[in-house]
Length: 305
Image (cartoon, rainbow, N blue to C red; front, side, top):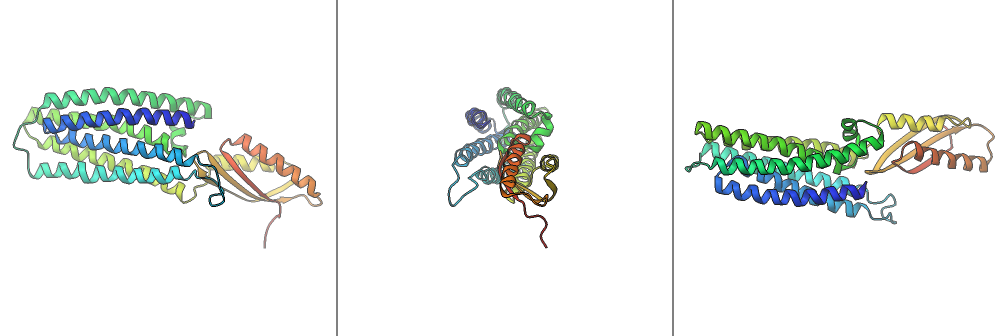
């Protein structure tokens, strides 16, 4: 999955960087605030995807003495930085430029033909990227045996959420920009174009908040979904040697790395070698039932005062 994610992000970086340049040049020549806001949108997407590439490379480092559970949370940290960048691009540039143009309308008429032509080009390019990202994500969801929407919601891989959300918001932003430019051309009022820039900025702010909220939970030590926790408990309690699971705790230490710690109340009189053999079987079965399980710690001490 890492290889596929990296290829998808590399393609997205090249595409978004090219589109950002085209939007920026066309926005400057046409004078369209909405198109300049979309340029900021593409710059934010490109920077975000560069951060995702950095996070993938840093997150692949092997565990060491200082980081015994590995560097998987690098992915979450860089995703949070990307959310901050998207917020700044949306709030500071897009909304700010739109408000400025509402207060001080431009003196020259905008070139609607150039702006709409650029938006059409970008829409096709973003559409191709969206189809590719959706196809890959659908394949991963099928492999995980869950629906596409559920897979995206439950995925702990920032790449999945980022690429799909960026591509979908790109298309939504371009639609808003096209409407703003068209209405400005039809009515002769630049307020429509400025309003479209503000809406694009608000869209970016929403995406940044959603991405940041998800990433915050993972950085703080989010547990596995309830369905997976129940599956893990069932695996352990299926063994007749286990009287009950006293405590079960899980935490993501990386997008595909789940830590599982369980305190067990075992049947009285079990020999040490039998306990060791049981722990080995439970470990293997937990990894088989939930593929993201990476670290397993079992404490056969029963309840504590």
